[in-house]
Length: 149
Image (cartoon, rainbow, N blue to C red; front, side):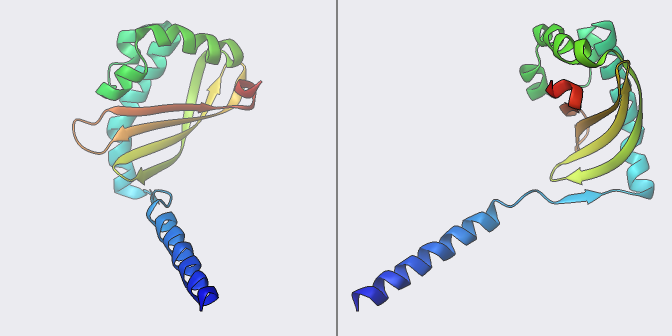
């Protein structure tokens, strides 16, 4: 009888673990097309321009112009110089970008770019924007093999 009880408790614990795992599943990602995609790009492209041109110029006001309050806290003015050292020192200045995907991820929009920098033409740039208005930049991520070195 004790073995059956232990088996039942073990099964219940295992089911609880599976239930918790289901609750913490990865966010749902929906790729946007057509008019929905165009609507996101209409506000996100000017913000991306501000951010990237500000980064190249070392102009924090332009770089952070469209940041959420949380982004401003996470990337204060002093962080721009550090980012320039860690990013542009390895891949050069930003040159251009091409939209790879526009996605809806939970309460955000994510625009994925293939970006070209002076020393690396295969940089993945992810910009995350709030869905609610006024739309703001909520995340910035660079991925490049050269940045890993």
